[in-house]
Image (cartoon, rainbow, N blue to C red; front, top):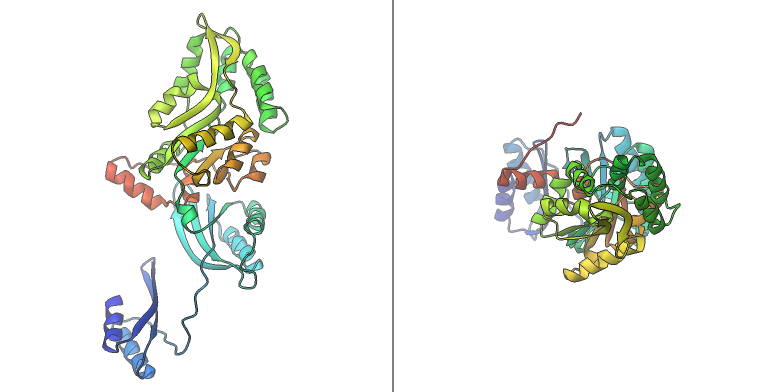
Length: 389
């Protein structure tokens, strides 16, 4: 079809100014802007005749100029399971309300969630519309619509991310490691209460960690190994790490948890770096203390900067993913901070927030599509889809 059109255009020696083509569910739409020195009506008739001859509908118009098209400034990723027509309509209306235009829409995922990416150009009357204004409007609408919406600036910056760090508890793995240890010590409820208060930002993390670890005094060292063996990755974690490493990302964890518990996980996933707390163990039992400097809220940001420097990655090219108040400084320091099923305090400061129980939604936020992920997996013979209830 394209060849038929361009054969006609070639005969009339036109200059091609712009062209765009898209195929949706077998329906092809092709548009071309050309400049012609001869009789434009003669060209118009020739194009219509040629396209009609192959069963194509055609619409031509004369006039126009070489005016520069508005370039998209933001990518808006809508994630849901499912995305209803009502939800998408609410997002589209919110964009219209601020004068933004949707330039293109494409599906980025059909598993484990539905993901749609919208390229959005600004209100022509306010081309410098603040990023925060657009994000705030969409976050409010998304909450009412029952979907997640991530807003990012498009351009080289979005594609330049090179290092990513994950929190561990309730982010890379399911559950809280210290609560698993506490269950063996019979102090689970006591520890959970302290953990929840710390995650909400109501307690200083270092103090809460000290208090929680103290309850583990006397626990056999073998329990630490048992808990490590029982860790369950967050759904999509392997896919996320595998895909990002293919793209050359440096991947690692910065955790308020414990090195002895997550060391095996770091090795299994082939992570590039790790920062966590170290439990003191004497004579085969936990002493109820940690050794060395505590990895707390400020410490997480320090660790991110340290690892970025070690790997030669500018801080603006880093990504941080976490769920708790002790991740606030780390997400604030990163080039892109993603709150994952997070507490309100973290969602408020994060660049974007997702509230779905699949870690691979991080890939879609970064502009990586499910098709790209699965094509690479298929090439390596590791493609699989786990049925979702």
